[in-house]
Length: 417
Ligand code: SF4
Image 1 (tube, helix red, strand yellow):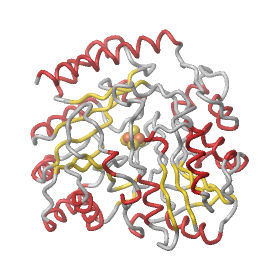
Image 2 (image 1 turned 180 degrees about the horizontal axis):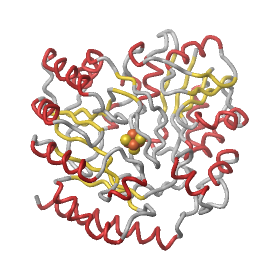
Image 3 (image 1 turned 45 degrees about the vertical axis):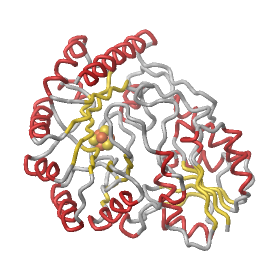
Image 4 (image 1 turned 180 degrees about the vertical axis):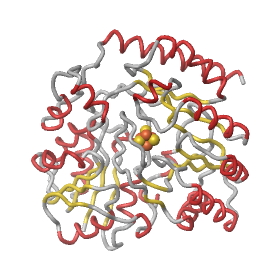
């Protein structure tokens, strides 16, 4: 059977004002790990093609043309809500007899997607085993997925040209950096965040190391664990480190996690060439941290930074500007505090209400938004959808200017070091 798995093109996406272009240029590329995992777990008799119009910056028409060229029996689309417009166009204008949509957009919007032309939607963090079944039985409607991370093979990168995906250096340099993940899900409930899986699933340390060694073999010099939250369990990190020792893994690595680390774990990671931790601090004001429902306060952030710096691990810190609790004083003191904390790479976003988040509900409940814009867009997606700025365009401009000032300040500082 001929199967095409695809991401969605950037063309027509809803306006994403969260991340400044400096951090997220128009030509950003992301290895489509979810699709590679589906492809790697299908029986080998199928002819599988993975397309990535997102990373290749294809238009919607070019994506449809490339899908049609393959004449697939089955089309699988990985969808995010911001790209609902291109998803609908592709569902309507391609001829595969069976079309499945998966990815985060399906969790709350499956009925719309089924009305928009999908034969089935997959709901769940991992859908590999259910996908194997769907290829055989072609179920219609919603399929609830419960694939266990340790029942499946890791994503084989042979379906793509991996050399195309090495990121160019923006904030820091890491030669031939390749990403994977050790776990999925995050137990916290930050008010702006749309990570949907609250129950964490972890790869066994053995299979994680098997994948990291494979990545080294195909050319990675630096491996990034881009989990939702990789450091929530100390004994798991200990097992990863002991597996690294067993396998004599010495390559550079890094991870995305939370602002909580014990001296013992920081020391253990550092001794195993762990270079950098990416952490969502979001704010350095206790009032805003509380508004965001973050699981830490400023003094815990101080302690985390002290420990991490002591063991020579660089910190990339995510921040969010634009909370209604934020004061001029918060902005005024931010750069100094970041310097004092030793946060080497600040990565600054602007607050945007994403669908199905507590923050978006807050705006509706407070009457700041008079109607549910996201619901309207999801049932009838329009190209380049623009959610109104909750506190007006002037405030948004001010926030964007402040973020640019911070970017320039730290760019200059890091260049001079
Ligand atoms: S800690 Fe990070 S991933 Fe977890 S809920 Fe908060 S923002 Fe989302």
